[in-house]
Amino acid sequence: QVQLVESGGGLVQAGGSLRLSCAASGRTFSNSAMGWFRQAPGKEREFVATISGSGSTTYYATSVKGRFTISRDNAKNTVTLQMNSLKPEDTAVYYCAASSRPGWYYMSHEYNYWGQGTQVTVSS
Image (cartoon, rainbow, N blue to C red; front, side):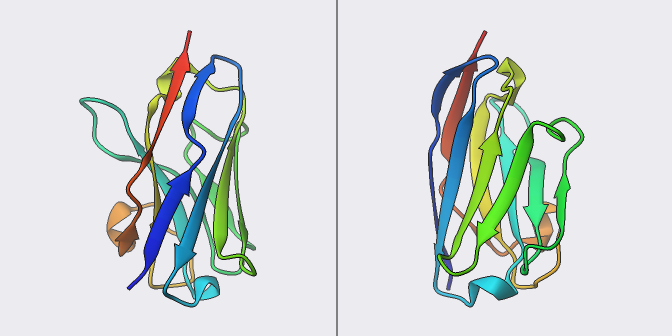
């Protein structure tokens, strides 16, 4: 079993930055692709970013590319989402997810484990 715990959410003004972290335990971390997803009120959960098990490959949703950066530290079993130039439309609950495979994936069904989510609110 894998446990994922997100932290770093909060309230920020448009144009500001936040850094989300996800701490993982219970599995060889470097064998797991990691992803960030988000869900806004009344909307379906959507893909944000993914990173391969080795950290060599990243992939972003078009809506966040150039503003968000995903990274991981396999020695510390953590994955981070640096969010810059935040917009009100980035407001959502952000979820960290882990796959049982080491590639990179943007479909939610590729992920087996999910965190509890952390709220990000961007005011205009």
